[in-house]
Image 1 (cartoon, rainbow, N blue to C red):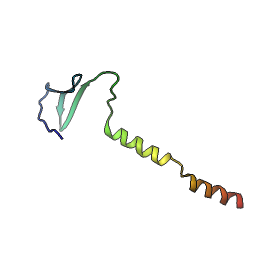
Image 2: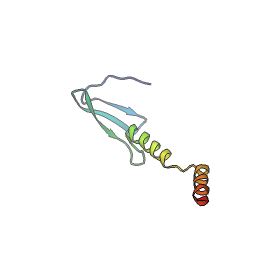
Image 3: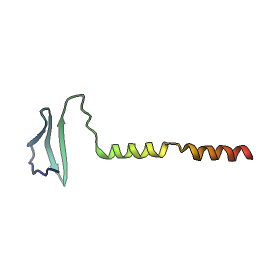
Image 4: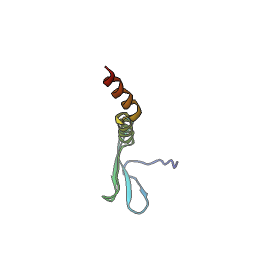
Length: 75
């Protein structure tokens, strides 16, 4: 992990075409501006984690579903 110290108005460049600029720092919160090509997705990590958790929760265990179906049919 690279750790940098930046001030408002300063930026870092990733590769040749991604720029992350410090726009504002207020009460411990940092506002970032990200410039990247349209084919590069820029997402907050917590949204990806929530999506992954939702997909896992929504997946169906076929074996358990089969057991439930058999149980219901017996009644």
